[in-house]
Amino acid sequence: MKRIIIFASGSGTNAENIIKYFQKRKNAEVTHVFSNNLRAKVLKRAHDLKVKALHFDKESFYTTNEVLNIIKDAQPDIIVLAGFLWIFPKKIIDAFPNKVINIHPALLPKYGGKGMYGRFVHEAVVQNKEKESGITIHYVNEHYDEGAIIFQAKTQVNGDDSADDVAKAIHELEYKHFPVVIEKVLGLRDEI
Image 1: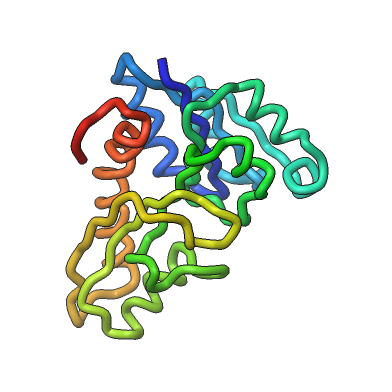
Image 2: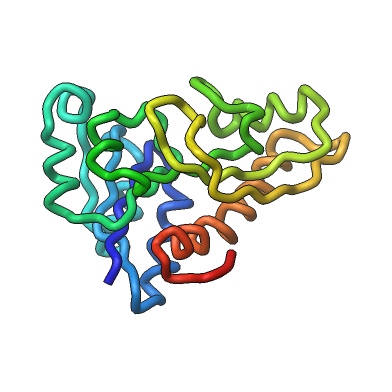
């Protein structure tokens, strides 16, 4: 049984989707959800789905090895960032090489980097009159949104689309593709 850990900072709809997807499978499970936001809805979603939900602060994440040691004890096969807004520490990336992946709500390298998340990305896409947007799933390195790309999926953006319209289309892509790409990275699926 492959073990998945999720990091998220907010609502946790992607985390919930991933947890439910793997609850229907026999080959992998989400064992923990970590959040840097004590009020994040993702913690309640995880708890409701019988997944360990843990909150941590900056010191335990960056300064001490507290979070790193908890992750090591959990022995994950993959660490999934699903709407996690802090830069991931090099010490965790180094401890789990090629096992930390992230989803970004745009077609990287466009609209990536610090401060480019969620609604900010969709507003920029609409403001710049882009014809398409999408999702990028990539390995995590010590820089925001610069790790090697694993998978991208696109959606059309129409001239009259609002940021909310783009967000809705992006969420559909995330829910459809993210669990499948996780399976692929875990070696449980041949094709995406």
